[in-house]
Length: 575
Ligand SMILES: C[S@@+](CC[C@H](N)C(=O)[O-])C[C@H]1O[C@@H](n2cnc3c(N)ncnc32)[C@H](O)[C@@H]1O
Image 1 (tube, helix red, strand yellow):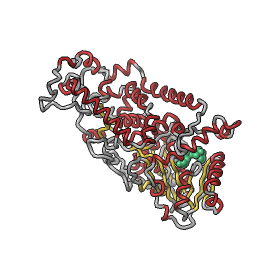
Image 2 (cartoon, protein in one colour):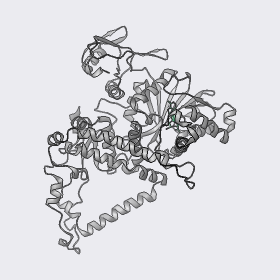
Image 3 (cartoon, helix red, strand yellow):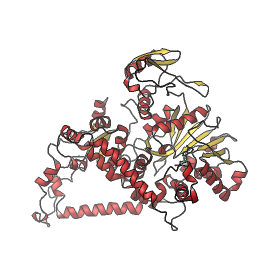
Image 4 (tube, rainbow, N blue to C red):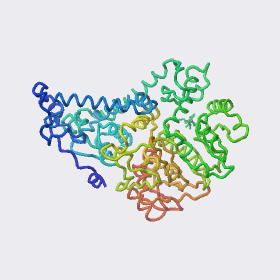
């Protein structure tokens, strides 16, 4: 109920009718000489500094105050002090990451401007669903872009997924009606996004084609340049003499070891109760790289055997690294490497834990769904899935879906990381997770995800998230999920215009895949599935679910032989 969401949001800022730019130039602030520098600027005690949350109004007394020489000097000192304090106190690794990925900010700003988002927000907060509909930009991507801008105080997330312009973004309001702009620049927004992506990918390729340079003074665990990582095709990994991809591959593995610095100290060990696993059980580190995380686990916790799965060339490198560092763990069988493609059936069908660390963020939802589904097919009832990834908080207090049909009932969720007036997601202190999100998006069409997105994605593959760890000082989280019935996956694809189509509820792990969707989950699944390109149904095959399917998708639905059947495939389900 979008009205309810708006009602819950902060009151809209005052309407702005005129073009900010023209007003800026039409009424420049008084020149410094018009002030008496000896007079304190704020002798009127009611005059306050302009609010960040309200639109920019150059004519206001508060805004004019900012041109007074004393105030200008104070502003400069505040900005200098804030920047210097941040650089002084923040861990240098994170400051370097911030500096290394800040190039996403202008790209996001460009989307804001080219898609005319500020004009859409002119009259107050708007839900991203509506912004997407009015600008033609894909909703899921737009939400992340706008949240990154909100994290940098350029917009405001007034309520979950509801964005508002503020003192900064309102400055780029053209003052023209949206209709006029869209007519003039037909679909500029979609095109801009399209070309940006390619422009950025192109820049990456140029950067990555530069010859490697030695950096002997960097500690081995830190390789910032390699944080931009590349999926190297199998045939390239070994290719002639190892240049350039062999270098990149080796640098990449160092960078992966360096990602330990994203985590709160000890989080890798405490993110899951490894000691609770029965002696002799098996933990599978899927897409485990050279096993940097497993090495920590294996050294601290010897109850379960660890299998590290990856592609052949990585397994080869991993075995070499372990043989050099801790051969006894390989020789005792406590740890072993296995070549395995995670898009193919998982060979371990009785694992205690499947660990996916920084794997899902490499992949778009449709592929991430497949990786999760392969694990679900191999899961026993006691198997746990541990996802280790950044979890993006909203830039406002998060009610976890109340009022949006989504209830993320997960142990360990936090509605906010800081009280007002700080941003609920800790603003600039959290920038790195949002930079990584954009890096994943422009490089692989992957992404970092919010908890809602992770919960919804996992559910499409039969994993129910039950717990997320708290990790003070880091947005890198360990998320624990348990197997539930798979709610997804048409076995036969609906053909456009075909007379009828059946969507089987699959059998997984010997369990009939009759859905167990609870209230609210249906919508969540549907949203996730629309991103996966696969229609999904959270449904028991009973009359209410048939009615739900009809209401949601149109068409004529019935329950036949434990399957949902649809006649005259509705447009929304055509694949
Ligand atoms: C971002 S790294 C994460 C490595 C490790 N989990 C860690 O946290 O250090 C992603 C890993 O997925 C592996 N990978 C990519 N495609 C794969 C596939 N189809 N099957 C198995 N592993 C794959 C890569 O080789 C790489 O080691």
